[in-house]
Image (tube, rainbow, N blue to C red; front, side, top):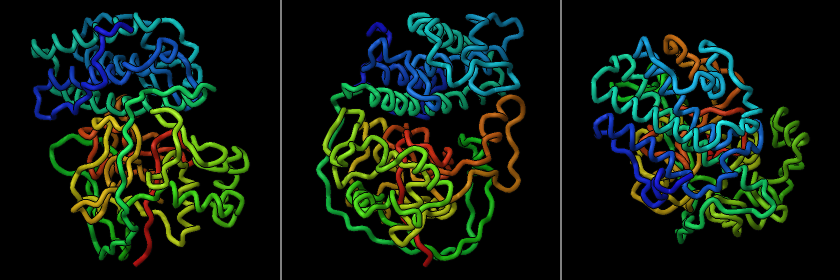
Length: 427
């Protein structure tokens, strides 16, 4: 990739939601390219496991989204950049047509990265031109905004997928050597009590939200307690050293089967000696003060049980988060890794950024949920089975992409995301 085609990593900034739509569109698109700046050409093609996608595929798929759902839907005589891309870079939209198997995305050596970059440039130019001419209908403007949020999701996936890929290399190469290590404050864990009662959760208002965040509805909560910070590496190390991965009593049945099947003995990316971990900044000593991350739901749940606590429900988490300042360690800070808790005016620390927080809530529709009409109804609704909800965002999430109502979801065995935990208890 030519350096003139991308932004430097130090130019990574949060696209301002108050920008004109055309400027915001280009800012988000450029931010994706800036995340690719540290990559070598070979890094763009390889797929390290079926759950990940090559960086080149992320670049093409996000362009396909705008071409398929904005440009082609707005122009009756639209001529695609390459008709074959409709098959290659469709992710899971069955109503659009057949698609290349997800597990085989790493076999798409052609088109090459140069052609994918030409594809991105042409889609960017067509979108910018259509916005300037005012030829995109209001319905597709809404889809364009959805597409920007979709691209920000893929920015995070690009980072987590690259981290997994580089971890598979015996040389343990770094994505960047600019990862920060912040001096820590000693923050004791405390449990803050919440009254519970009849509360409302879910998105409301005119600002953007995904359909799975709606409708806003009432939930009854028993009084509960929530930890003031995330669980640290040091605290999770105690679980490991106590034989937590060898004791089935801590684990849900499916979780114990996963431990045996996958031979888990520590969080993903920890060394066998549990004294170092692989990060986007390369291999480094395990800091006992940083939040533990790259846990599956099963590991988070087992630790909570071992600690005499539990995971919060997503409703508990949202009620607690609603009163907290929306600040944290996001991708815009370019730390590339969770940071230790730092004392702040907020009663609850690290609610946003650092790591996604597993909840004990299954990913299911809210009462009265209706998916978006058409192909985009496949975006969230059809995944509402066999997955668990995470909240709060991570160090790889864009700050402008998140809200306290945001619902992320993954299968309970997933470990390659920046996922950690916060303890909860009944009051």
